Length: 400
Image 1 (cartoon, helix red, strand yellow):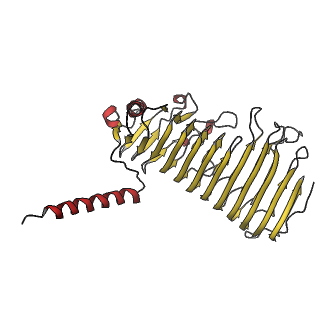
Image 2 (tube, helix red, strand yellow):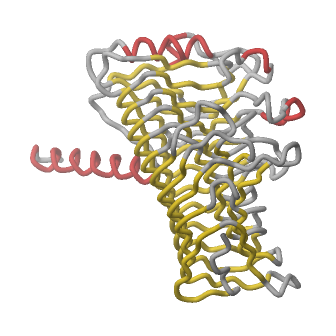
Image 3 (cartoon, helix red, strand yellow):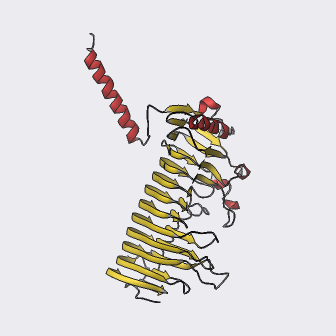
């Protein structure tokens, strides 16, 4: 029997809708108008010891030079690669890197000469997505890590404008999993970032010197901060993060280097922290440059068995000197912080005598002991505080 033409067209349209919905549900952004550059066509191989870095870079260059929207595809399969630089600016108005498969880092640390494994540099309107996994193979190199010589970042965005990273899994980075530097209008969302709780310096997301960055709707558990927000950032939003294990969600470290810039406008909300060593945290170095950190909000945070649920530490790493921090913290608000504390001092405002904290607000704090911990108390030094609503434990009064 012959199918009527109208019925055939309807069937084709329905199939198109079903396929589009399937791709959306599975977290893969797909634009049929994009020119596709598959790394297989540029020499990539799934052989375990074959380094695919050059094949990926060649595919990127072809996509970057494209006149229209372009997409680099790393297809299903296991691909090993060393240092990869996605350099711009691009002719393509929008460029997507779609990782469908499993990308493994080269375990030789000498491969990474620029401090990162995958680097987007001076690129605008770029998307990294695909549902795949980015495995930094950090277990081979963590023994070399120390605070002065960090290992390669899995993904760094440097001088990127209007960038998106979503629907990807990051595993066992050598250093930070994701670092964003000197960029603007960046969205990081729907990410899963995991590393062992004892892995050193493996922050989930680290931000420095950016404007308008959103980190949302992600699950992060590493050996260091789930999200760390350094100097020079403005208008940062962190929301709906499930954090743990790790060191919590942190504004800092601030004041470590001489060329640091002021930080202003950070909102961290609707997050859940479980078993972390810190919760809502602001930290600055002792002997620091005179900068300001202002308009910081932690709100609607659930703490589960968290050590130091609320902490300002302006004496970070102070064992070598008694010089006070010159970072001025102003207008920091902790609102609707609830849950359980694994340490007796649940609220600690340890500010600098050289630059006392001002405008520290504690509103609707409701913390109870975890297990046998307690009773809970608060501690305060060199801080002007405002207390509102519930205060459990009793909040500290002005202590300047």
